[in-house]
View (cartoon, rainbow, N blue to C red):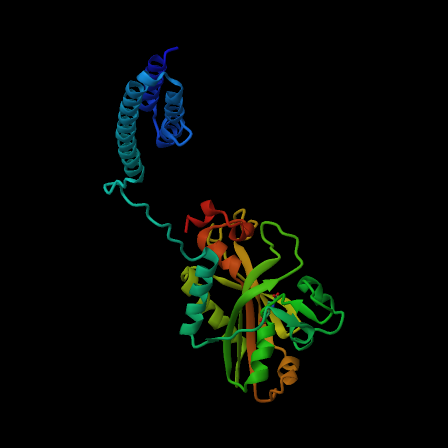
Length: 341
Ligand code: DAH
């Protein structure tokens, strides 16, 4: 093929390629292929030397022209593609300021802790102060100081998780009674809210982890009537005057006499329902007059001082408050449950 023909064929191919290129990378490949240092046009310049002497000037001129026009076409296409890429980028990054914003999800207090706060608030109003103790306890504060004889069967229901023979996760907040009395002289008027643990099989009313609210009052002339009156005021403040507090004899090593505390089931108003097993009452905890052995154990003068104590399950109060029939819901982390409060 004649040099000129070959050249115009190359030029045509190159032009078509440049115009068809849809992105800068493709365009750059074409530039290297045709106009690069080892490109096709460079090769053609070299071939001019092989032409007959008289043809060389014309061939040179034609090649220069082709080179110039391809160069121009390339530049033009490059700037067009750059503009296009810029436009696409802008479009992709565009923010629609008219779109409504995404509202952050605002959390709220867990129903269990909200109930606990409500309970604490009532006792603060009655002159109690909040006391605290560790969740990881020792045998002495958990049992010995609470007047549990060694191997006493009352410890069975307090079976818990042991870190070692002497160190365990507390099974009741009654431990805080001992820790508080060891630190101060009467009068004592504390509530101790907190988490407890037991080796219980999890079901609708039991969980290995749960909350209690403990109460302890030690002073001169404290009677069982004071305990009853205080718990009645508390129950009425929580659930209204129609809530009846039922006391029934019970046994706890650290109180004598001891009483189980049950409240009118708020779900059926005492009529009897599934949640209260048709009894009209829901057991919420235990209470009693502090056993003199416990007071003597912390060095209190039992001739002068007496006390009452109680411990209630916070989950029970939250269940009564909201009509919840399964304790596991509190610990499920299920948003469908939590969002209802
Ligand atoms: N600690 C007991 C329990 O978890 C409840 C209890 C009963 C607490 C009597 C008291 C009390 O303070 O006086 O079963």
